[in-house]
Image (tube, rainbow, N blue to C red; front, side):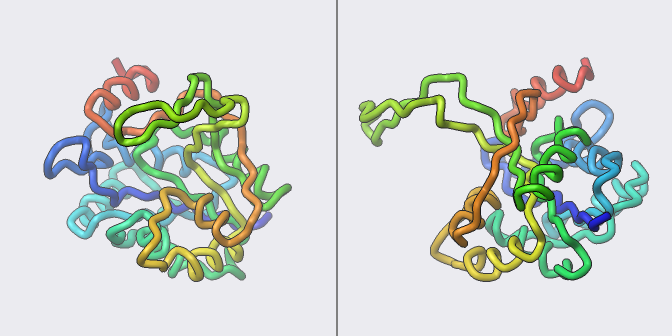
Length: 230
């Protein structure tokens, strides 16, 4: 079976969580937020190894989590960069395309990820070369300028809320990041955007179960309810 490496990103700045807070290391029930994702990848039989990306001041804490929760698949802890794409690039430097056929990138701020979802993105990647978790839009979406005046209403039947994990063939993802991810003038908010810039086809994986992203303090309460921690 092809080797699969997961990159778990936990180095972003939590600007909307409050000054000085690292959302991925906040408590969610009895575990830090990042631990939920690590345990999901640990439990996924399709994943062979994990690379965790954290801020420099959280490296020691990350090593402690590895021991505390028995994350045996965690092979490396690396320091992230200023932008999300810089953090992914830091992790990719330790992956050899000839050793890993597929790479799964996941934001640790999504603690409700499940082994089933991870496997579904891998299933798509094996068949089509990519698999990106996404949920069809159910709300009507408006386009508005800075003055909040609506300029258009896109057809929501063609709109999707893209999430993580995002899975791709390793060689193509590494090449895309080496060519486009290093651009200092362009900021990419996810891996699919980097692949699109490289001209690669991105295929979505429909997922309707909760996969919330921790962004504001209330999201911790919502995630706890979804994980049935209350």
